[in-house]
Image 1 (cartoon, rainbow, N blue to C red):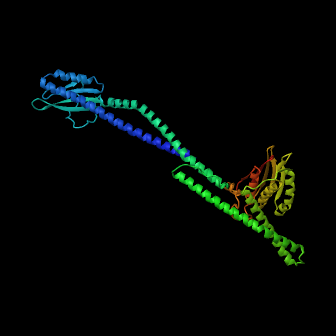
Image 2: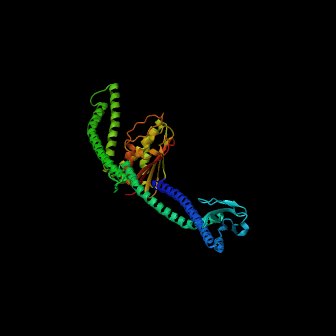
Image 3: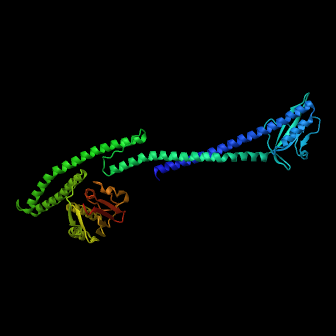
Length: 462
């Protein structure tokens, strides 16, 4: 999963959970506030009835109290109203409920709902009012708890749509902000990753340009500083290798000429032991000379000084001739060497010597890692491209090494028990460099235990 998507999803999840918790908390708080407001209104109605009863005690006007009781009963949430003057029968409205209205003392706090027969849960507010001379009377108002809760729920439902709309808008804005921040974080990291791939491919002249003053900017600046150091070290190494190979070339050629003169007998007759030692020296000189030539080729490729000499030739005929030279080696090793051309016209415009070097490097690599089975060379393509495939039945290459095998001096770690293979790790790097100098490409398809197929693609016209 990409970093920007992961960042977006994680922050979106946090936003959803946060908004959900906030909605629950706000809903609970709103219900608590509305319940307090309903209780305050109930007490105010009861206090109004108590005030009317106190005034009636002074003026001896009971009709005022009955009027207030009837006015209170107009509220659908009021179940009953009761007036209990001292030393007189109490008055209950409606009268039919006189038997179910309990006699209880005044409460100092919010009364709890009570279950009354035929009425359900009822909240009964009881207040005392003082008499002019002494003592006190009581008034009671009963409120339907179900209606009160329904009213609170209705008000909450009326508040819910705009709250959900606001939360949805906040969620969308938060998601957009999260996506933008994720992109702002992922984009510079992507550019740094591209820079690492460029360095991995040997391109050390592509700095990562980020104008940031945070940790990602520090990372980009450290990466660029590392790239500059690598470029300097690479130049020093290239100069050293180039100088050493040139310095070794002349004495090696002299030693080779001298050994050839001794082997030919121009310096006098040799016995069998001397001839054997000289032949050993000559063989090692051939290998060392080939290594020096590979180093020189690699140095020219890295310096961008490879200039192909383009000429048109029949690639199928050249490959057929070169493969004949390797059939003896294939028979000696016990592997089959095949060639198939799928083109009627196999002409290509390329550097013949460099084309031969690319093919020989690919074929030598196939021989090196194939102990049994066979090697198949196929030539195919179209009007634009010439495609050369060299497939073997060797040990194969782990997919994680597919790009690394084209690096100079890189050698794939061999499985346990596999015979040791000699090599410098330059053959594939040279072949890839020459292919790119022609405007082509070299790739590999392989997996462990299933052989490897190297695919060389070259433009047919230049």
